[in-house]
Length: 212
Image (cartoon, rainbow, N blue to C red; front, side):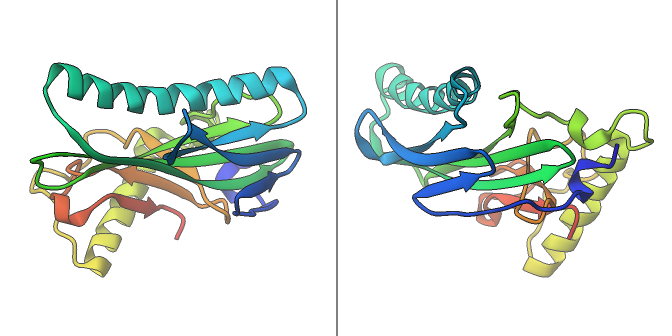
């Protein structure tokens, strides 16, 4: 099997309504809040739709519950919050990959700055299953987690040099791969370093393309 991130791009269309192979993605608002936007996926198969949209709903609900928890138990007043998303859809062999990159941002009164996170959800459109790291490593073909980690480190160093970003002194070597990754429109694999994960807040979220 070819490594999935070297396969040919099928399509990418980004708008209010997105078309991903056999799937249609449209925007919805959480409980009518126009600042909390999330995708709803329609594949024509109710069981697959339920699996995919259930994962998306869980992600958004977790974010909203965190806001309520901070307000109710930590006495923090929410000054602002929003979510949005990006979509990429590709095909590798017979597998149609739907990558959803969901941005979640919150700001509490008295805080020095907002907190923003990017969460990636990668789905096999044919089954509705989430696609994890094993889809990158191609078990049995000699691509290991350590090799991917080395590629991420090299790409991170290049990007920081290019953008003038300073990493924390103990950021490298990486202790583990970032939790979130996704495929872009060219089937390049991106790993996401969240705020403070490897660099100061000023560096923001660092999105590393290991195939650039």
